[in-house]
Length: 340
Image 1 (cartoon, rainbow, N blue to C red):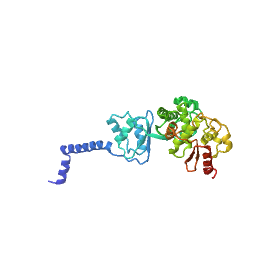
Image 2 (cartoon, rainbow, N blue to C red; image 1 turned 30 degrees about the vertical axis):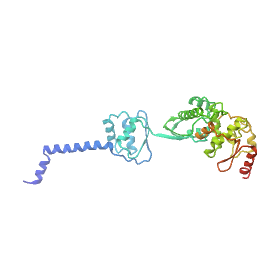
Image 3 (cartoon, helix red, strand yellow; image 1 turned 135 degrees about the vertical axis):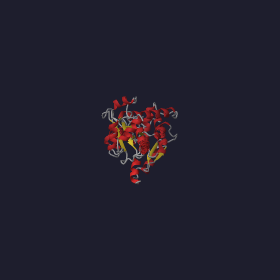
Image 4 (cartoon, rainbow, N blue to C red; image 1 turned 180 degrees about the horizontal axis):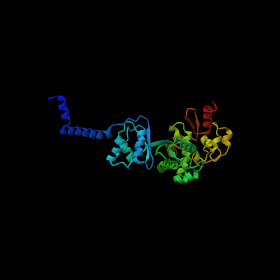
C-alpha cells in the first residue's frame, strides 16, 4: 500500500473534511470574539473624529479607515450590527485615544461621549479681553456682534447694568459648537452663585448697598493686589475710606477709565482727568467693575481685614506698604516711589 495516495484519500474523507470546517469555524469564532477587545494603535496624536448629523455607519467607518484607526470597515460594522448599535452612533466631536479597543470606540460613539474643549477666563481680565478670547476660539459658535452688550446682558439673564466683571474667572469645559452666549451664561451663573454665598456670609456694617457694589470693589482689589495674602488688607483700606467718605484714589480705576489712551504710565494730568471710573476725581464706588475678580478678591471685599489703614503704596516687589495717616503714607511714597 502506497502511503501518499492513502493520505490524500484520507484527507478527503467526510469525517476529516468536517473536522477541518469545524476547526476553521472555531478559529473564526475566536477571531470574532477577540477583535472587539484588541487595542488599536492610533498613530495620530490627539486624533479626533467628527460625526455629522445624519451620517451612516458606512460613512463613519470610512472616516475611521481614512484616519487609519481601522484597518478595514467590515469588522467594525459587523461589531456594530452584532451589538445592535448600527443606527445608534451619535453626532459629535470625539477624541480617539491610542490603544482603544473597537468595543471601547463603539461605546464612545454610542454613548455620545464627546470631546470637551477648555477655555480659561483669567483673573483680572477685562470684558474686552474675554470677548477676544472667545472670538479667537475656533470651537465656539459665534452668535453675538461686537459691542452688543445690552443683548448679552439680556441673553445671559443678567440684571446688572454692565457686562464688565460679571463672569467668574475659571477654566470651563464645553462641547464643540457651544455658543458664546452659553459660555458666558455658565460663567455668569457661577459668579452669581459665588456672590450670593459670600454676600449671605459677609462681615456686618460694610459700606455696600448691594452685591454688585461689592463685586465692583472686588474687581479693584483684584487689580491692586500683587500677592494674594494682601487682599484682605487692601479691602480693609477701601472699606475704611468709603466709611470715612474719602475718595478711593485707586490707580487701576483711572487706567480703566482711560481705556485705549493708557500707554503704560499714569501722569498727574491723568489723575485729574475726570472719567466715570476715576476714583481720584469722584467719591464713592465706580459704576461698574473694572475686571474679573478672583475668589480671593471677592472674599476680601466681603470679609476685609479690620485695620486702621487708610493708605497703601506699591513697594516694587508686588507688595505694599500700608499706612494709617497721610504723613506716614507720604513718607512711604518718598521711600518706595520717588526714590526710583
